Length: 250
Image 1: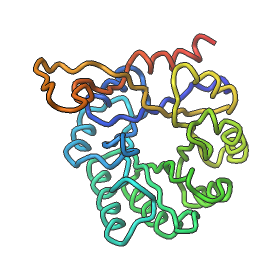
Image 2: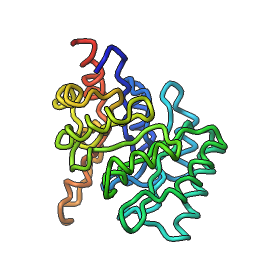
Image 3: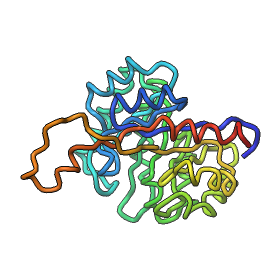
Image 4: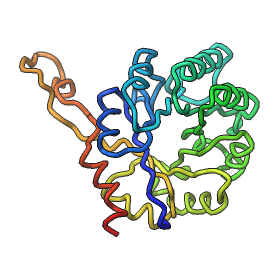
């Protein structure tokens, strides 16, 4: 990476986690719900609350109506459009979208409609990791550039960004200044330096969570696996600060 300051985006699945990420120095929040399902659109109340509370971090909302594939029917597409309109009305900084065709190409027709809605509200657009499910990453990138998206969140078509580092570097080099390629998936303070060195990235995405004990005092031992409900995966400010300190310590 050059001397440009690293822009860190943190994926947060609650208002509390978003505020933690902001206080730790994250310059942008990808706001969602349902992280165990890969991330879903948060409720209107959560979006409104995040917009009211976040001041120094930009707020980008994940627009994904369900888990599973990125092939949406007509009803789901209407929901996606409505969610983008709501984000615009709330004054969000951007949205995170992605729709594919059955053959694994980018659904440019419907994505173009979504980008237009977002831009009507002066919101930016990130294309999410549906990109990694496309049948040709480099052609998909060209299609997404043509749509007018700002960036692509990607692991280079692999399970983690470290595994896809070689492809990520190729994508970043081919993209040039036309679009930002933002590596994400499996990013930790321990592997961030390696990822930066291997890819030349300018922006980095991660959840940076740790497990913290619940404050519940009563625990029903008769229920199976009660421990799963008596701890919480929360955004860890120490992990965020550790990643942000990489550049200043190098």
